[in-house]
Image (cartoon, rainbow, N blue to C red; front, side):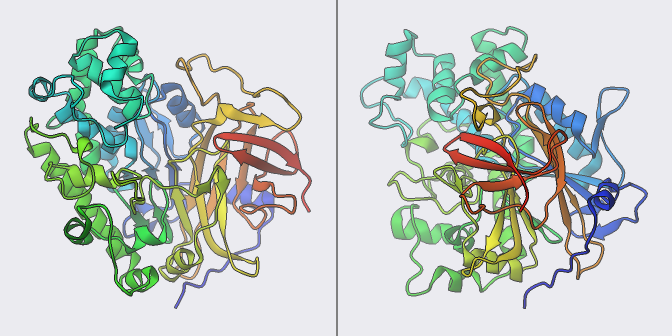
Length: 509
């Protein structure tokens, strides 16, 4: 019942020629991908203007025209994997450029929903003047459920910062202590050319107002994108996420106040084996669009903010989409979401669960592409692994390198990362940048091919096709990440703990 993939043996020199994917090649007409033969994937730029420009410079599918506008090359598509803003002074520019690409190239450009995109929906209520007046600072002031009882409450923030209660103070606190964006307020001030605090607040309000840049992105973005033998999500797909459908939300609210689901005697695999991947994806995408449209059309409520309650079924317009973007519920149970999820355990790569890999394989998926959780200075490849240690065709590529400056090389005591001239204060990226290129299959019995190219945190370029050499640990426990470094032969292998990754190059074999 699974898809049979055929792989053509190629020399590296032949690959180097083929993987340029010339626009002159015959186009594939494929559902969900547009009329393209090559798809580029980039994710988690997070408002970092210098990183975005570095990406455009290395991209094989994007280029700037004489008028400065981005152009998408003929026969090529782009999937942006989510988390557009937050950690640099290019939020508004990057949003505008992505939306302009979508407007001009329509079905050749696809957006994925990231948690940083979704969580800004909170600002419509929490920065609303009426809501601020209705929730004065006090010991009983409503707090986001994940900061209640911690040192990160709004009252504590005001005490420590010496600020008075205001929309600007609330915005600074929200970004720093509830959204993981400690410098975002100052970055926005820089992007706006030294704007006042009030102007910065208004810019955030504008993002989530009717027709705002971020609302436009949310309305056009997907939770799951399935295209040929590719699947895209922001985070990861677990068994619980596969078993969870939008129609289950009403059940969850009835059973547990929107926090958990009980499937009775059925196993999770029995639940999700009853429907196809594309059906499940379409349900979530329809749900997200409906939530975004409801959010755009509603006035800011003054009585309750979604964050103070959490979970599904809050009754707040867009609240169920906000819930989907969170990793945990108020009762500390794990949210079965594909958005706030990852393929790592304490920083170490984890292959997809066998039942999930089997389901993806049976639904024709060869590559699953995601971001969300950073891992070093090169995209992480994780290959399906069977109980006997052999490897299957399902391959995860997770491409968030937003903490690449934390990468060290074995034998050095310091991070090796050239300073970027345009890096924002507090930069964690350095010069690392990457692009995933997918050459779409030309016949149903063959598999698409994936190529990874970019620059490491020490400035070293690399370029390789994903092959049988990468995506699993070597016999010493180092993860084999890639090869094709321009200045040294061998395999790039890594060890990781949290966001800290150590690189080294070893001989093949």
